[in-house]
Length: 295
Length: 152
Image (tube, chains in turn purple, red):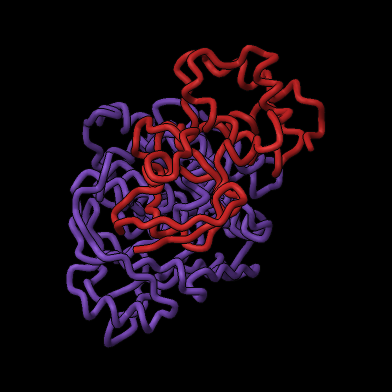
């Protein structure tokens, strides 16, 4: 399959140069890994006049991890995340989620920032970004801004990114106390597939919980009312049942080629219970290792 | 535009348009036929090659992007002779039609470089992006398991 639309290919070496190109050429498209973009170009879903390849900009390759904070530059791939021992240790949910992204050859190229800029509802990275304290750093032709992930997604494939803006990095803070978590992705088969539904749970040693659902609504979901039901409580079967009953009220899945809304809803409940119990067990140091398949 | 890179150990330059996909440039302009056109959307893995020693799906890469990089296709891996991995595949009668074989060999080569002695789960995870419609994968996985370990 050939790409029919014609464009110029530009490869700036600095962020400033990229900003200038983006301001100058109105119909530009930014390129990082390209695993989504090239497919969209082949299908004529996009017709840019310029592609601005960010891969020549060194500062966007930055990946720094400490016990408390993580910076993921715009060019960091999912393979980079998996290879980082510090991420596995301090941000284990990210490690677990990154393992489920497509296949090795895609993970070697696809970037996290590209994933959230594509903003396809079945993305794998939204779960961990929603449960960790995440902010996006964005530069525009005139100003810089930093916004929380909760304000980023506007709809399927829609974000608050303006035409003259570039997301330079994702900044994540670890919870103040010790934490553990779990990411479960439902696909049609084991191996490479897009998500039918995803559940992410983060549990802290203060008995606080954060929950996110993905691929079951136009944008990722962080149901604060469910988190409140769990906060500080002894998590027993009765409480889990009560929370599970509420899940259909916080998600809005559709029926499509990959699954029906009924199946997605049911599986969100099943996966929530497994992710919650696994998170609690992992917090105690007795849970299944990260990367375990829960389905 | 002119794009220069190292292809299977040899410096190459090629004149392309910015919208030309690497897979087609390799096959149609440079005569390297091991990467195959399967799904053309990154799902099937028949076009898998190595860029700077990392596997990528060449159907999702523009030729313009690989300026200055090292590209390795199956032809490059077997420049001296069939590799031990390929011998293992032959010995196990691994492939039937063989369309997936170049991508499988490239992906498995990357795996064995990272994990010389992989277990079955690791093999399945590494090859999840390479589809085979003939064999049900069993002989592919078995052949990799039978390799003399650790793989060098």
